[in-house]
Amino acid sequence: MEKWDGSAGTSAFHMPEWMIQFADQKQEFNKRPTKISRRSLSRSISQSSTDSYSSAASYTDSSDDETSPRDKQQKNSKGSSDFCVKNIKQAEFGRREIEIAEQEMPALMALRKRAQGEKPLAGAKIVGCTHITAQTAVLMETLGALGAQCRWAACNIYSTLNEVAAALAESGFPVFAWKGESEDDFWWCIDRCVNVEGWQPNMILDDGGDLTHWIYKKYPNMFKKIKGIVEESVTGVHRLYQLSKAGKLCVPAMNVNDSVTKQKFDNLYCCRESILDGLKRTTDMMFGGKQVVVCGYGEVGKGCCAALKAMGSIVYVTEIDPICALQACMDGFRLVKLNEVIRQVDIVITCTAPQPSVLKGNKNVVTREHLDRMKNSCIVCNMGHSNTEIDVASLRTPELTWERVRSQVDHVIWPDGKRIVLLAEGRLLNLSCSTVPTFVLSITATTQALALIELYNAPEGRYKQDVYLLPKKMDEYVASLHLPTFDAHLTELTDEQAKYLGLNKNGPFKPNYYRY
Image (cartoon, rainbow, N blue to C red; front, top):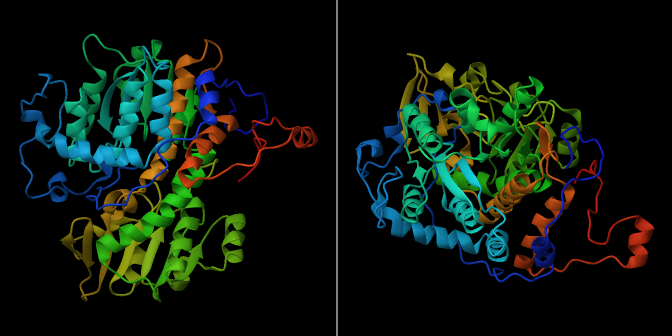
């Protein structure tokens, strides 16, 4: 397995026989169903739950029972009470959502079907902290089918789908999550997953690093039995590298965030669709002719710009990196400084993409000075991972009035009557105000599952106490599992061609330093 620094070397990853056999089989889940309406996901917690200025109640449905799930006594149909969700009676509705998601997650379902006989995760006790949606429910149930025991909490206080959490609890998964948790609830849920009599985790699946941080802080002795950490997010990976640099990382960790399949598909293609979805659901605006400035031209920025340009918007780009800046120019976008266009644009979108040397979004990309100069009704939102990119805290002053228009939409009104439209209080737009494509999440979830299998089954000594990238071979395998959905047919190298190129006919097909 390759280290983060990109140094060449022989991969330590060995593909199991069931994986090799299945790579050549056509999958059954190659028909994509008609998309249906889904309830919106809520705000993203990018750094920690302490950054929120709003009460949880302001983002929950008024029809919901206001009693805290922690104060309820609930049991599923099997009599178990080892869970804490909003309302266990919503389980049937949540099960339907999970079944719909399964149809758009072909690789994960195929992995479940092929590997469940071998049970490669038998004996694994996985504690997880991710978004709890229909898509991650498919991942959780796949891990269970492969032999793992799981306990789960939400990495985000607003993105949990209550009906899905109920469906998981009804199926026997100890789930501790509901939409609209307070900060105290957030840490209580994580603790309930970790601190349980007669059960101790030996694997961690994290999204944001909060679970890993909690175990380090409260239960450091648990790491004596933990085999590894799989981390998906920019923020969580940043925390892992900080631990590694300080010599405090005591187990191997796998950086899923920077795998090719995650970067290209989850960041570029996912955001290309979800940026329009989020803006439409919150503002009902028309994009044709609108002037938009996109701050950052990494993978997320590229996806946003491509979508808005295709809809007829006039798109400007700001960048600090001359290489990304040149890419923007060659793609036909005008490169500007934010100050040059801030008075005229209709939409401001921040997406300061993380770089390997930074691993987090920028801070105060849009400042109070920029906000003061914006035109009336300018829309301001964030598509980057971190909620620090827009200086929302500077708007919490007595002279400005906040007016809630609808869920996730605020008007911030200046004394002269000018107002801006702030979406999700500067948090991640697509997870806060819309949904993300299930098919893309299938790619990421499959990568997470394979990373857990590899770390759990790795012989002692294969991985040191460091952060590793997924091997190229695994990335290619994840991609190949999704091709049958499109009835796609890969060309195979002949023996002569493989010898000429110096490649194995079965891959990997690109060197470690190749940039897709």
